[in-house]
Amino acid sequence: MSAPDVDILVQSPHWREHDGSEAAVRDAIAAAAKLVPGADGEISVLLTDDAAMRALNNTWRNIDQPTNVLSFPAADGASDSPAGQPGHLGDIAVGYETLVRECTAEGKDFLHHLSHMAVHGFLHLIGYDHQTDSEAEDMERLESAILARLNIPDPYAQR
View (tube, helix red, strand yellow):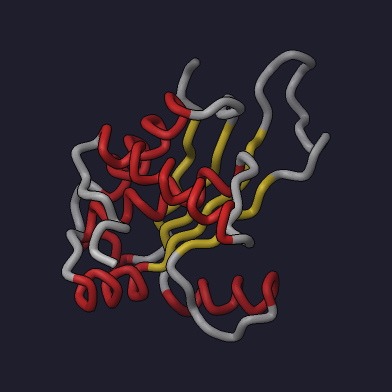
C-alpha cells in the first residue's frame, strides 16, 4: 500500500517558527497509511492560524472558537479521478496557536503533537470517529500504534 499524496499549504507565517512541520505531517500520514486500509488517494493539509480555524469551526460545526485540527472527508463519489485510480480523501486543517497552547499546557513536543493531529485528522478522513467511548478507544489505540512507529510517545499515556 502506498502513502497518500499530501499537498500542504502553509497559510500562516507562524509555522516558520518550527522547522520540520511539513515533513512531520507527511511522515505521520505515511505511517498511518501503512497501518490502515483505505488510505490511497490525495489529501490537502492547511497549516493555518487560530483566526482561520475559528472561522472554519464556526462555519462547519457552529462552534465559535478555534480548535487544533479539523477534518473534511471528501464526499462519496466526489472524486474526478479515472476509474480505479485513488481519489481525493479530503482536507485537514491545523491551527498553530492552539497547538502551541496545548504543547505548553501538556508539556508536549511541538512536532510530536503536530504529528498526532495529522494522524487524528487522517483517520477521520478514512472513516474513523470518536462519538462513542468504544469508537474513541479504538481510534486512540490506533493513533498510539501509529505514533509509536514514529518513535513518538503515546499521547494518551499521561491521562
